[in-house]
Length: 198
Image (cartoon, rainbow, N blue to C red; front, side, top):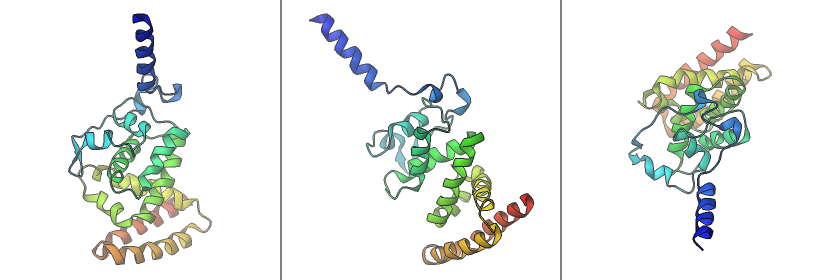
């Protein structure tokens, strides 16, 4: 009976430890793990997020330094969560996304650019707030640069960028009108990036 219980507890601990695939093993890829830890995000203790069942396990593992990001579906799934509409999880996913942005390279960078652009278009007021937020401000230009690469790959990129920013501007004017000058700065930086790479 004692041996049976030891086996059962051993199996439970294996399942609970949440094994990660080789390509996400933090020991094999130490430069692709999170190194930025906080006590709280937006006045909520970090444990609020780590214990939240609406937040996926791989983003939590990444935050804890137990998951190395890669250009794989597990990473892409939690990166896309930066676009969530869930108000309780949104801040955690933004923090995790920003941490990945700090260490990204190669194919993962291409994927992150899509999410930077989508975040700008979906949440322009929040995107602009990144500039003055102590958790994210050092990466603000990187956010813009990654989004710019995505606009660059559009057909007729300058025309398409201007059209898209007209739509973004309407959203911004309804929700955070005083930020319109910063939106124009972002547009100009993206246009400059496109011209430099044509």
